[in-house]
Length: 485
Ligand SMILES: [Mn+2]
Image 1 (cartoon, helix red, strand yellow):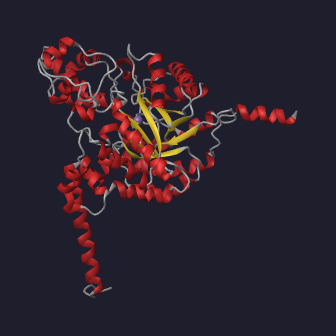
Image 2: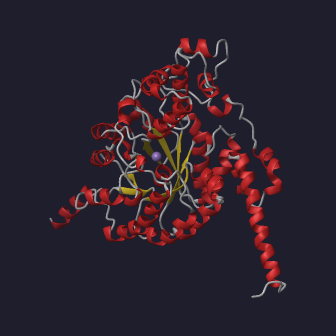
């Protein structure tokens, strides 16, 4: 009898996992990805004792920002984090065939990047595509699975970019969940970059997907529209397995819901995370002075900290809105703001109703500005918009407007292949890339940094060499007794 009761209780329990984003998305969303490694390292040991499902700490914009602005080797950061996180799984964000860069790469580069990411410390790779064209994810998924088989480390998470529109029915999402399972992923992520997913919609969505797949589902959203904590609550009740949260000093606004708030909300329920508020408070205490510093220096603006309900009205991500405002300002056309906002959904429809996430958000936003400022729709089109119509980014869920295709790229051949083939990156390119940069190479990973950001990486390599020769010089001179000790 007593045993039966115990059994019943253990069946009921379903602790929700927390992925902590402070080392990646939270600072990408609030301080333009500028958190340096030296701020991260002192707290790693304590974070490792919390019992998070995982720590997101790499990928997204961190790679670019490290090389470009912080003059840090992103690979070195990853190795240092791995040294400190002895128990907790490390997670990264990976842009499908584009890896972390802005163009599609050949499969050999994708393979090498996945191998090196795992070798240097990543456990879970979250892979997404801006059109949700799963073919653009297959190479990265296969590479991760291959490493997992060989090394026993590495887990594949496929992320769907969440969006709204006629095509995005519950059937669509449920069907995608099944397809992701079939393509060999270990888990699914719903990636809601603009905070569009409302609480009751989340409940329906998770239930529908769970009916179609056994894979764990992780939910990622942003607090931008102010709905996110409620969305997590309903999603967890509907069976979601992991939620993405940020420790309070780096939570809310355009970042994620606060870790401590979600932990407290589920305390004493079947979803109890089991995480200690006392220990979490120590993490928050550590990051609070840094937050204050960022506010004082202007790195963290109060503009990103509030709630912006307009993201729901126009389904435009927060970052895209601020981009749009500055583009209009440059053209002295701030009075066209409302017109452009209304043009965005129309442009999105014309090009097959894609999710608005990097890079599709910029492509659609800029074209909407062109359409309004030129006084005639598609009188001029950007190169990227043409590429989107040509099929170079892959396939959209809905067909594109034939009229717009005729007007913008008349008579041109359109591709139906995945992005790497559509853009001619269908042959190995790693060797060529290496030959271009071999004078700077100090580790195999340098070739991959160069592949993603050629100019920025070379600048970094030169900076690194200068630093090293300075240090060597100092050391040599000290050894020779040239400097007084
Ligand atoms: Mn995000």
